[in-house]
Every structure is written in C-alpha cells, then in structure tokens.
Amino acid sequence: MTCHSSENTESIPEERRAEPESRREERERRRAEPEPEPELGEQDGVAAAMRDLKNTGWYWGRLTANEAKEILQDASEGTFLVRDSSQRDYLFTISAMTSAGPTNLRIEYKEGKFKLDSVVLVKPKLKQFDSVVHLVEHYVQLSRTSCKSGSAPLAPPNGTVQLLLTTPVYTAIPSLQHLCRIAINKTTRHVQELPLPNRLKDYLTDYAYNV
Image (cartoon, rainbow, N blue to C red; front, side):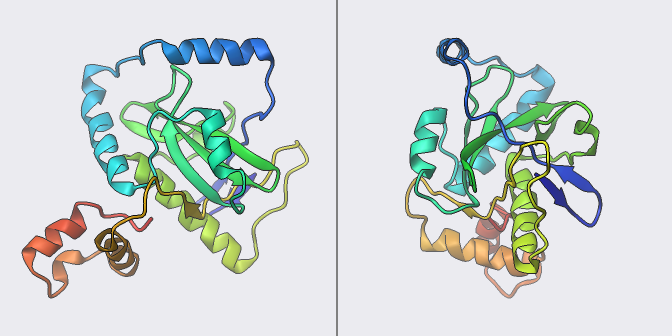
C-alpha cells in the first residue's frame, strides 16, 4: 500500500502471508532461541519503548503469528495489535487486518529509532520515531484521515494490499481512566495548561498518546 501524508509518500508493504513449510519451521526454531540483546547504548530506548507499550493495552507480548491471525480473523479492516517479533533481527511486529486477511509488518529498530520495515529503496522515505507507540500513533492518524476523506489509495499493481491501522485490539477491557486519558490527548498536547490537579496531570503525561 502507498499512504500519502503532507510531508512525503510512505509505503507500507504487506508481508507474504504464505511461506514454505521449511521456512515456517526455521522461524519457529529461531523463536525458541533467546532474543538478541540490544547494544548497550540502545537499551534505554528499548526500555522506554517497552514502558510505553505496556501502557497501551494493545501490546500482546510473545504472541505468535498464528495466534495473532486467530485474534484478527473476524475483525474489520484496520484492526491491529502489536506483538514481539518472531524473527531475531526485529523486536516488534504489527499484526493487522487488511481487505485480503490478516498480515504482519515488522518494526525495525536501529540507532535509537523505530521505523517500519520495507524494501531497501523505500526505507529512506519512511519516517523514524523515538518510540513504537509514536510510530503506531502516526500511522493510525494517517489511516483515519485517509478513511474520512475517502482518499485512501487503491492497491498498487505489484500485488500488495492497502494497509490501514485504525482500531487497536486490547488484551483486556481498558480502564475508564485510560480511555479518558486518550480522549484528552486527542484534544490537546498542552496538558500542563489544563485546570487540573498536578497528580492528574502526571497521569496524563505518563501516556501522552492518543491511541
């Protein structure tokens, strides 16, 4: 899929849904091996990303691709979740429902930044983010804007499908406080200026995202 933003054109490819049995076996074997440790200089960024992810309610941790597929099977297009990647070279993966069924998109982490995995020629065009949640938030806003305007592009001729991220799948029913926090973050980025107790402001700024 190609998604258009006001700053540039971003390509969000679809992973292949069908793969040889040998490749699946190899992937499962690698999954059983220990995950690679980030470089010492990158650990703080990963730790901060994990804190944000655990606050979202839609981070599922060590979920397999098949388990994610089952969760998304009857969901509407644009429904998504984030899980640990099954591949050793990646930390996280977005699993989402497309018009052609569930698919997976890896998140690349390099030099303290997160971005969507893509083909080499497209990578320089993809935005980079300080956190996984910030990355997801960006593409959710992009997808929702495209849906509202009716300007979402058609599937390109190379066989990939349009990928939208609009509705997260929560691991459990989120608290009313968390939902209110998201609603407030959708309307303002200036929480400190709101006429609220400092304790409540701290709670709002602890998760400064709107998804």
